[in-house]
Image (cartoon, rainbow, N blue to C red; front, side, top):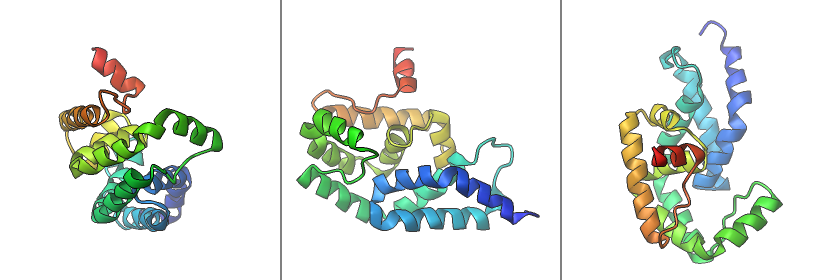
Length: 182
């Protein structure tokens, strides 16, 4: 609080990654605004940050998730467009684009439709795990929900996604695979 210029280190450390996540959720038109607004809110509310938390990343993603929730209609329109066209405008590299097109070309429309049909809470959890590569604990912290709620929402979202995608679960991560085996 006494040295607000130190806050810029948080921005330098997390802005690009947060931007990629928001870009995937809302598209290019809103990503810059949401990320900027996330850091503005975080700066204004920095006195509320729980200093016992070792990392600010989940806190920042939680703020962003709340802002994304306010733009839900835009997100749903993007999923509808993805379902219609099969084109995902956010690709990290050409190699990723080629691999993604080969692997997922046939299921993009189904994936977007299934994502659109998830309730907002389940979708937040699923996308933080799948797109932001969060651990279950980071999702719980970001969304301000118990770890058990993260697990149940992810389980419910996976079941719905499997049905919608004909038995394929595109959301498995190494952590979730370990948890599924346990």
